[in-house]
Length: 292
Image 1 (cartoon, helix red, strand yellow):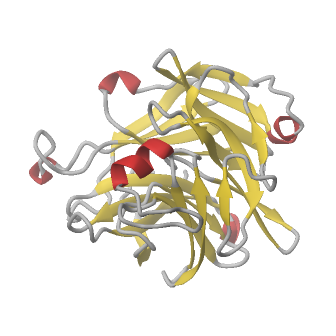
Image 2: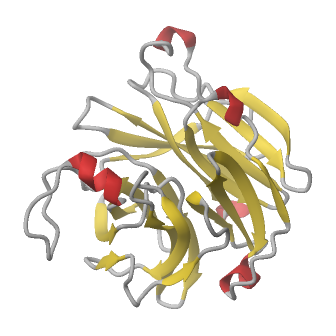
Image 3: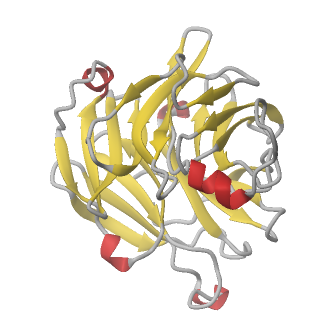
C-alpha cells in the first residue's frame, strides 16, 4: 500500500457540493457516491429552496449513481440522514442494497443510527420512510457511519459517544437481525491528531481509515499534505501500518474523501477518493492500489 495509487475514475456529481463517500458495484459497473444537497435547491414537497447551512444541519443527502466512466446514471435524495461519511453496498436480486448513516442529530447534522435500502432512481426517502430498515446499535451515540465487507460478512460502525470516536465490528447477518453484540469495539486510532475523518473500509481482519484536510493555511501543497492512511487490526484495535498518503499530490485543493475496497479481478484493491477544483465547481478523482 505504500505506493501511490493509480487513477481509475474521474467525474462530477449532481450537486456542487463535494463527494463525501462512495461504494462500487463492480458487477454492474456502477459507482454510488454521497454528497450533501447544495444550497438553493428545492426538493419535491418543499415550499422553498433551502440554504446549504440548513441542508447540512438537516442531514440532507444526494445519493449519486454513475457509470465507471463517470457518466450520471441516476440519483436519490435522503432527507434527515446525516453527513454521508461512509456508505456500504450489498448486492441484491435485480439491484443493490445500500447502507448509510440515518436519523441526523439536529445539533450536528450527523446520524444517530444506520439504515439500509434499495436504490430506486429518482426516489426521495425521509428518515421515517417505510422503505428503510433502520438500526440503532449504540443508543445515545452520534456520527454513526457504516462500512460493509460482504466477502467476510462483517459490518464496521464508526460512532461517537461523549464526543469520543470509536469503531465497532459486527457480524453482518446478526446485525441485520438487530443482534448488536460487537466482535470488537475500540477507540478510533489517530483521533488525537485532530485531523478530519474522511473515510473507512474493511476487508478480512483489517480496517482502513483516511484522515486529512485540503491544502490551505497550515497544510500547504509544498508539504505534500497531511492526508494519512491507516491499516488497523480489527482483532486488537492496533495500527499495524500507516503513512502520509502521497497519491495525487498535484490536485488542488486535494481534499481526501472516501475509501472503498474493490474485490474484482481476484486481488482486492483499496480505492481512495480526492476532490479538487474551485469552491462551487468541485470534481472528484478515484485512485486504487494493492492492499498488500
